[in-house]
Image (cartoon, rainbow, N blue to C red; front, side, top):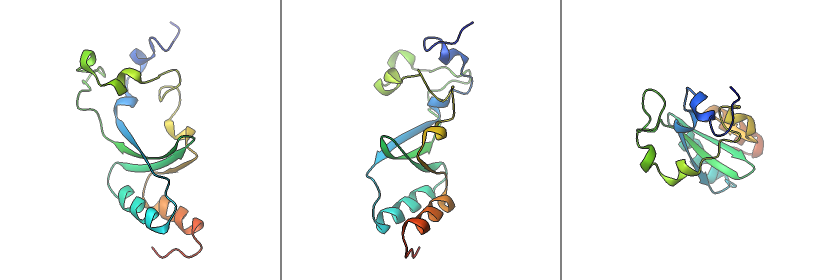
Length: 123
């Protein structure tokens, strides 16, 4: 059977798109901005990334409506974000991180970036 956007979700056993939430943030520019970002990525399940659309926080948090079999428990009433999700090229095809310009999964990775970005980093 050929995998197409119409049937791809049925092949995705991990339901990757239902295991995280992203929130776009203002582009961090100052040391204070990066100090705040360091605080945010210090929390479990929180990472930050930059891609062609800007800067984002990523929260690893499984949807409470995701059923054990990977299906949506409120499919007919699911939010518009879920309805509009485009799976032409999604996490089933490749990890999202491959499309990031910058990725900070934790405090240490972001701190290393801050030390390179700012000549005088006092963190």
